Image 1 (spheres, rainbow, N blue to C red):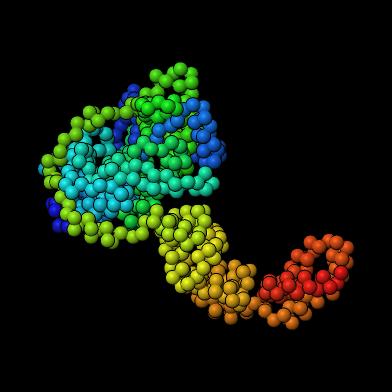
Image 2: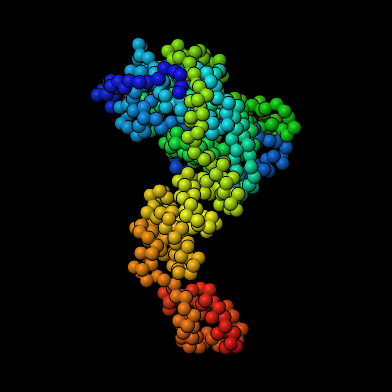
Length: 547
């Protein structure tokens, strides 16, 4: 186990009664005071955002114009621990403002932080998933800076000796965006605490401070500058989110701020080895927004190059505005020297053992990349592979269905088609469905042996998702057994041809597409239960004989 000072005793949280209100800070009317990315208020988009496909096309065109982009991402992942990183306050999203705080996470003098062991475990899990080299001994540092939502005046982070470094992440680009496999380097993974949150008034004259988030554990994952387009960056971020959810270390919800991506973008003429001046972009709450923000920033920087104004590209932080689809200057970027890092004196080193790391590794689930390769090996298309492995719950349902001997492609088609469509309409996840993997496999078996048709199955699967039960019981209850008696189907075909003499004459005159009309009438008469194979065979013979 990790040989470090870890929390063993839960102490009651103090100062509850008087901190259920937002703390308010007045803004000086002349102060040039900018906000954190997550606190900027933007209006709803007034125009339909540019499609990712169009953004990808433009990025490719920009490369032809003689420039290439260089992109790196800093991803902050909130960990789903029961308590905060260095105190016993609950880690609950959505609590009343300033209700989950204590003297420790508010930085009161005389308080001491105690490291939450679960934070170390989550960090090791994520580091293994990112193929990183794990530091057997790492330490915490104080990152000094002033901001109204940082009550201590510093952030506990890791500077020169992070818990892990030198890893990589494998990503499959969706077929609709060109396809292909990419490997992006991971510079480091380190543990730190989150800051509070500022809520600004509509007038902009004052701000309110909610310190519930102060002290919530974070992992910061820093990529190498290996990405070259908005699509690649968005897919990298999406893969990080998949890992977070597969491992269960966090929920990865971008709308809650549980996963935040800050993107560094620069451009340079093709052939130039030195990097251009990088610009950081914040305030993106979806992977689509990441792609669009990057492609806009690439276009902006290339335009400045072409107009001989490259000196106007300065190292700064810019905000993505969804309504205008542009980035705007937020503040000049601080350098490392501004933070005055020094070792955290109140926390010991984090010392890991090989046995501790091996124990965590042995309990790791199958990760998205391994799952995708396994699905490829059983013959699924890349489109199927990416869809099924995208959500760990969907992948688990699919794998459980295969355990019953079901054909992989048929199971994939049903999950990706009718099941997903129904769940999307009802705003349900697959684990909230009452359909079980066993019953899906049973339904597919009934189709294959001719007991029911595919059309009947579409009716059955809706019942199973909404109400549960078994395929057999739904078939019996609704009398949905497929009619497979040739004599019965032949009688229905004869009746339909007799009832539609005009259409039969038209068929004989060469309008052969009417065969579909006759088939539809037979299916209507049989209430959808006639075997399609037998029906088409018998109908074809009858029509051929009538000519």
